[in-house]
Amino acid sequence: MLINSIYNIVDQIFIGQGVGYLGNAATNIIFPLVIICTAISLIIGNGCAAELSLRLGEGKKEEAKKSVGTSISVLILVSIIFSLIAYLALPTLVNWFGCTDNVYPYAIAYGKIIVLGAPFMIIYSGLAAIIRADGAPKYSMACLVVGAILNIILDYIFIMIFDMGVEGGALATIIGQIISCIIALVYIPRMKSFKLSKKDLIPSKSIFKTLGFGTSSFITQMTILVLFIFMNNIMTKYGVNTEYGADIPLSVYGVISKITGLYVSSVLGVAIGAQPIIGYNYGAGKYNRVRETLKEVLIVNFIIGFIFNMLFLIFPRQIVSIFGSSDNELYLKFATDFCRIFLLVSMLNALEMTSSVVIQSFGNVKKATATSFIRQIILFVPIALILTNIMGLYGAIYAGPIADTICFIIVIFIFTSEYKKIKSKEVVEENIIIENSNKKKSNNNLIITINREYGSGGRYVAKLLADSLNANFYDKEIIVMAAKKTGLSENYINENEQKITNIGNIYYNNDNELFIAESKVIKELAKNTPCVIVGRCANYVLKDYKNIINIFLYSSDEDKINRCV
Image (cartoon, rainbow, N blue to C red; front, side):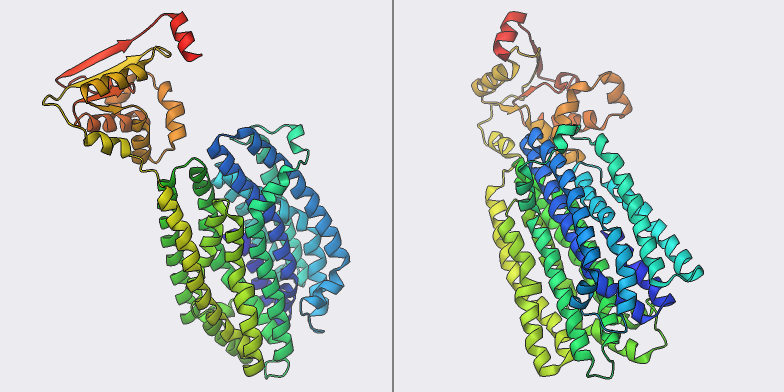
């Protein structure tokens, strides 16, 4: 997410240094088209990522597979259509976006190149979300990093050395996006969760469910779009009657929005990064893990919000000067005022942004959408319209902290209601252990381990034995506890614990994290005697314990087959 913001910021910095604030204003005019590209990639990419996580958590791999294939095809098709429409309608669009006469030639020159590269931006952004949900966040990040680094290098070459102006900045951007897109496409045939076939790429009606999951992200971007166009027009309409003129406020708003983009991207990056974890565990009914993840995400995002908020308040002039026009006092004065007033309580936005993404992970599209809509449209626009009629240009600036504060209060109630639902559904993972500890214990400290052939009824016999002896019973509870110790998923442990070989060597050399974790759990459980422990090499782990009986169950092939059937 940060790298996505850097694509926009790097252009703004080099163009500001090489062309001036009119060049910055031009990138601001074209930025709504970038927002639309992001919205398209998120409604499909984030929607597919959310559905992929939920379906994998539910064990519905075929549904997940079809969703991914359809999403990729639709992503490519829609991106091409959007690029063609935007290119043809560009002169009309820039006027809608608040362009002034001075900025118009720069905006058209920059915009034509950007919209031609739009398909690559949309495709790689959408695929990045799918790749993350497939369990490869490092690869997802790598494809963006390579493009971003190339963009920075080419920006310097095209603008500062070849003096290509705004066209050079745009060209550097789309070359970086093309490379990122190619790297992302290379990953798709090698997905971890499943292998896509050609028939999976044929669009199906599953896309509507995917779009439903991504609606919140889409509306979040569209509300940003409405806000951006609204503010551009406010800056030019009310700025023309001030000492700053129309161009300075337009340019400053573009610069500040790019700076806050780093903050927004940081918060959303953490929330979206947590989305597969939240969605998977929610789908799998592991509500305790969902709650733990939510707490961590909120803590991290509020810390991020506080740091950015302090930077905006303490160093506004220094930050804005990075983008050029450092010798223009009027420009710097308005930029400093805008930064300090408009972003006064920006850290409060962390809750709104986080809530929108995590509620989407629960499949609650309506509430996630409402959360996205509150600040930008329901609150900010009406407040800004009222205050600009009273205070002029500065009215729109003061509307920012007022809307942020009211939105924060509203979202607290929305998030709390969702959090309480999760808490009420929470399955306490160690409830069986707690229940066992409340059983009446006998006077001895007998430990019984049961190993068995597959299909011989080992678990069934062990449960009967534990009940008859009034003893604690442990089987899959060991997986849950080992998962908590290692951080590995229960699915991974379940699939790999039976593959452990050469136990003695592992045990004495500590070279298998899974076996060591389960061994520690078994030793802890052995303290809750009397107990019956099924499998997991417990007879070996507890071989030095006293009062232990090791049982091995076997049966005929016919009997085992009948039991399995």
